[in-house]
Length: 234
Image (cartoon, rainbow, N blue to C red; front, top):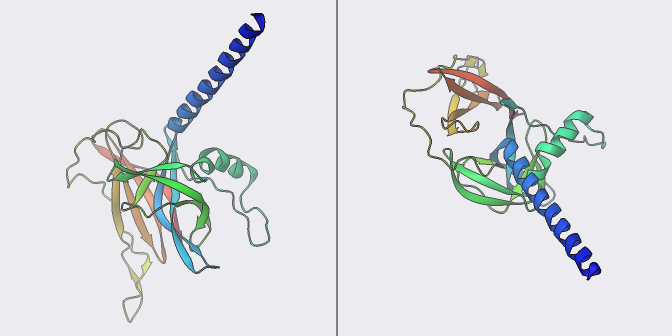
């Protein structure tokens, strides 16, 4: 009888640990948010491209940070430092490996769920780790956080936009005389990244032969830039 009681207690404790792990895993997944952009990973060996999710920003503890990465050069030497690699293992790698689930966002609202097939790379100017997806998303952005995009967002007037400074620093390839032209800043989506019920705005900002990402947050009727980075270029 004692043996049975010990076995039962052991099973109970084991199941308890498993449940605690599941709970901590759920908490970890909602403790920070990663926003991914739909991109492509090109397989030069097989001359084929695959849909992939490229991380563009991590939101944690009220801060927006550029996604850490851990890439080796052609000689197998790490481009990133150990701190970057450790943060990559924590914030990015779990969501771009086989079996990970990412939630597609249709202008800030969850629309579909995608499964990562394997980890790949994307990028023209620099290699960036991404998650190869089971199919190509219709919409541009995805997230690791199942809580993002589940609430109806506060209304946003068409005229309610941040006033962006014009940048005349893009090469004008379309002009015979060359010179510079104004760069395009394109509003890509609204997403409530911080969970306050009001959307942040994600822009794709043109540079010569590339782009970068900016995110704007509204407080006290005023828009502020809270993130600038990521993107790609030749």
